[in-house]
Image (cartoon, rainbow, N blue to C red):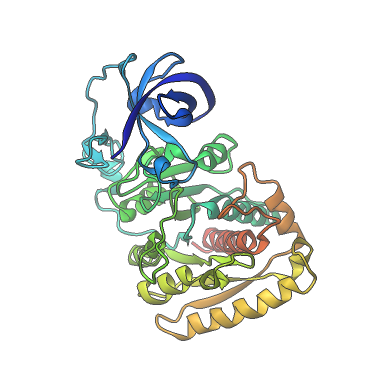
Length: 382
């Protein structure tokens, strides 16, 4: 762990749970830093702060921040220990204690103590955090067509960022009412509810928040190594298994790209084929987007059709092998494409926006459309 000390020069953007700032660090100059006030207290200009610069020094990490460990001139407020004994980031110097939705001191403990069934609630599983706003946009678009309202929960796993506060996407979707609740599970923390496991987080989404559908992705900051198994998105296959175990309806969102320069991510990414084809042991609805109707978003008239052909071939190969997923084709209509342009949270994946890599967002939005249709059918046929 690399730490440095500096003085806060000015404060920048602020969103729920997070505060940007500029810090003057001796022998380095000004660096962009991020503080979580609920962990380190309110930091003000002129404060001396200790920064963790480990990832910043290596040029790694989503956002490019130094992270405030403590403010030496402004002590964090003394807090009387409250209820809860879930320790997140356990046995690290920055471990934090939270009240879990599923633990004994929680008002929801009785509800979750023997809970064991999602009652066919659709659960959309995605690899990247950047899929979240597009899935929500697709689900809301379909719900509006159906004349319905949807309650949408997000379960954030710990494959990327641990604090939900790091995500401007979650903060924006929550503040605008596009997302009803965020539940952090595993070592992740800072959601509206915290839970011990993905299983109890999914059960909380259904039994505590009353979600019509739930989305599962890691937090910001996908980790990959260029190897077949060394990437955090492997957990999407486990999320399919967890959903099936709890009698939910797993919906597999495909990671698709028509712009990624890496061959292993062209068409359907190997992250999806490995996680859903090798890790998932139970069948899911794999949503295959039909991209041609949204061809106006692509660089050439033939780009969408060519990518359709590639994706269809890859998807069939995925479904032909155990556990024999069900392929569900969803048209990416111009209206769905327009819905993506109206998301309150920015659309960006691997540094590319909607117009640089439309297939990535159309694919995840299509999964949201299918999940909303399943939610409507579940309501009409309980």
